[in-house]
Image 1 (tube, one colour):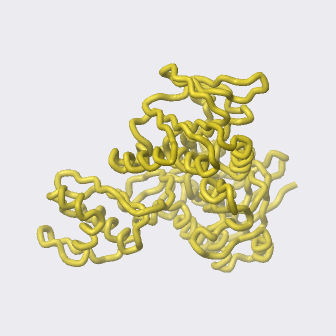
Image 2 (cartoon, one colour; image 1 turned 90 degrees about the horizontal axis):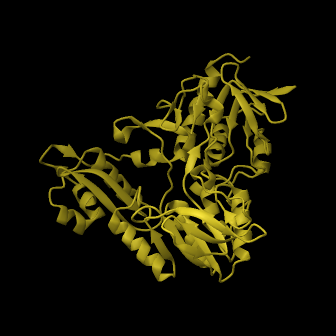
Image 3 (cartoon, one colour; image 1 turned 45 degrees about the vertical axis):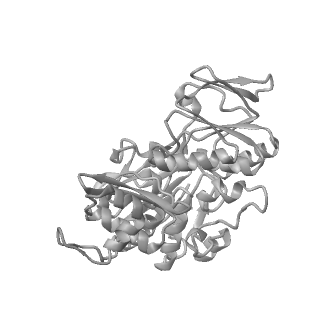
Length: 419
């Protein structure tokens, strides 16, 4: 036995919820669309898990952060999906996919067929075992990727009031979890192999600012080394982490944030995989015309980089400063936290047009005002005009992509004869 749908969204993360909203706006007929998710709840704003969900007072809980509240739009509760005639197939693992036959097979053996498939499977958290470290199944070792992870992390924090925690990793998850732990009155040591936090994104100056702020809140940084092993109680709880340089750090809990891997396994050998993700074109269409991919799992062309295909994991940041990357007297990259719409447009224009920046001292002094001020008039040296609103910076967000994919998939599906 099985079920058939015109459209199937595989994955229940942020992109799935935003795509569902766009489908409903396009007039999807009842019974045409389903969302299949391993999680037992309707799509939600995943960034909330590392922020409001971890607060000790008035924490965020569902249904407060179902999509699409992240863009101040409708909150899509399970009732909303029912009212729209969109079927949620939750708590369901898909074990295999056949893109030629247009079928998905679940762990229970059910076959679900589709006319158009949108892959929104996201990514999974990397485990310590993948780096030769055993013990991440200990009761007080936590990861953070989904609602179950976040719930376990909260429960563990509640048992460690005013005790010690070690955070492994200096990226987004590591930094956000360290802040949450401190807010929950837990003493934090952060361990990562790079010379400074957020090494893939931050310059040393930006990292210095953040690290100094975290240190002012009591966070201790151990940089340039990695976890080697755990010390455990007889009941399996971790009591200390041992680092590669021999340092022993006692702890009552461990939070691991060492990166992710896109969930492409179902489609390897069937779709083109590039840079770790499913390769798609400008319409997010894969090498199979009936299959699309969005979010962390997709490798897509980015206009800002000359249509070079990239796989981007994006989140809007918090408060206000940034950096420019200057090469041979021209701006070739930019980073901005907490700017307004006009400022983001200005830095996007500056990078797009490779704006002249010969005086690095002036650039550093003026900051975002450098491109904002120049953006109000023509750059006489090369005839470029910085006034056309550009939004390439938004193209990195899987949410924005999901909207266009849903619209195009709906249009494309309508053109083709139904089975």
